[in-house]
Amino acid sequence: MKVTAIYPGTFDPMTNGHADLVRRAILLFDEVIVAVAANPEKNPLFALEDRVSLARTSLTGVERVRVVGFNNLLVECAREYGARVILRGLRAVSDFEFEFQLAGMNRRLSPNIETIFMTPSEQDMFLSASLVKQVSRLGGDVAAFVHPAVAAALKSKMR
Image 1 (cartoon, helix red, strand yellow):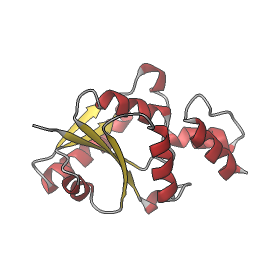
Image 2 (tube, rainbow, N blue to C red):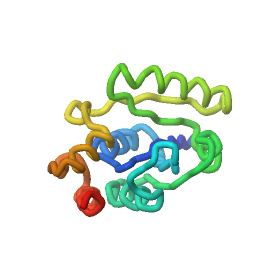
Image 3 (tube, rainbow, N blue to C red):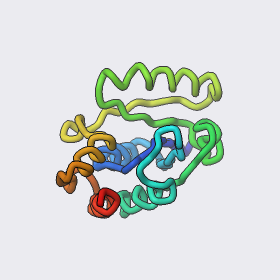
Image 4 (cartoon, rainbow, N blue to C red):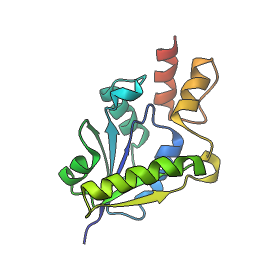
């Protein structure tokens, strides 16, 4: 049986930590859908189309991965793409409470979709899109944390 996982997030922008999680997840699942959330409540730096494009570029060459944008309920997006698993990353204990609540709500909305948590690689434990944006905003070099296209887009945005 083919198992598709959906990895949702704002990905504003996609970091090397996000990309690493996708590369490791593809070893466990037949397909991974990277679902970029519109999420206007977070007031993203990049438009949805730009975040989708940057995520696709960041994942170039990774087989069995699709990047899509969405602006509806995650469980509806998961159903649309035939995903039976929601994949979420946990960097620290502080992430757990919120992620636990999301997993519970998603289970109530769609009991046949499971949530699975993965932790980042050791070198990416500290990495978040918010930190990358803050470093970039203050003129720091983010090349070690994101794909070169993302670094260039951040530099352009921060001018």
